[in-house]
Amino acid sequence: MSSYKVEQLPSPLSVLGEGPHWDVERQSLYYNDIYGGSIHRYDYAENKTYNATVEGFPVIGFIVPVKGNDRHFLIGTFRTVTLIDWDGRSETATFVRTVGEVEPDMPDNRFNDGKVDSKGRLYAGTMRLEAKGDIFEMRLGTFYRYDPTEGGQFRVLKKSIGVSNGLCWNAAGDRLYYIDSCDLDVKEYQVDANGDLSNERVVVDFRVDGERPPFVPDGMTIDAEGSLYVATFGGSTVYKVNSTTGKVELEIKLPCEQVTSAAFGGPNLDVLFVTTSAKEFKSPQPAPAGALFKVTGLGVKGTPMHAVALD
Image 1 (cartoon, rainbow, N blue to C red):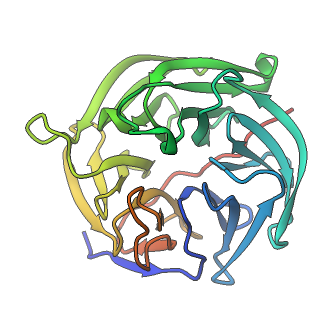
Image 2 (image 1 turned 60 degrees about the horizontal axis):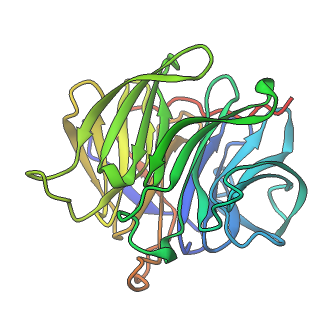
């Protein structure tokens, strides 16, 4: 493998950057700043990042494009999934409608990571708000699937989640890789035609001799060969993991501690984009923490990401 190169991209320093999604048609990377309450579009050709807020929504857990409308996106807002309109350049985006809500009786929960499978179904999970205490203390989150063909309901896939994170599918779409950050591992599930999960298998456990490591696994993506790329919140690293053996094959080092997620993009899907956080939950981190980075020279390509189908 040729040596990789890490470069900081022109972008604001996010409080908690997350959710990178590469849009092939627009050759742009969309991502969000959870506690900055903003959404972003990095234009690859222009090498420029456009930023917007959505009035009334100070916390945004994820952003995914909507199939068939290049101005529409779904965002996770606390425990609600919201449809917004954004031209990708303006400094404000507009509320369109509420798509659905979960856990109305749990005000201390919020949506975290959310992604879309090849059939246009949204998978997203909740977690307890970080400000309410140690994330390892209680498991109040739930992992859901949203499919408009099922009556627009959120189907429960897993309960008792600590921090729902790190979603990706293999190229065939019949394997889902998933992270509950509080489990300190990556799990694999078989996915049937309905999108339901079975046959849970631990791919890699990041504990060291049974003890908690100095980081938690956060967001994740996958390459066309099936290797996983796991961001480490607190570890300054993206780990490349063999999804069959669980072996760590490469440690991609970043110049900041709180690495949150990753996604392949670029014209050839061979650029790894990495989001980070400027706020560790004890104290703010110095720049370039919170920046958007790209990693080149990895010698692999990613798999296309998908827009959500609402109709």
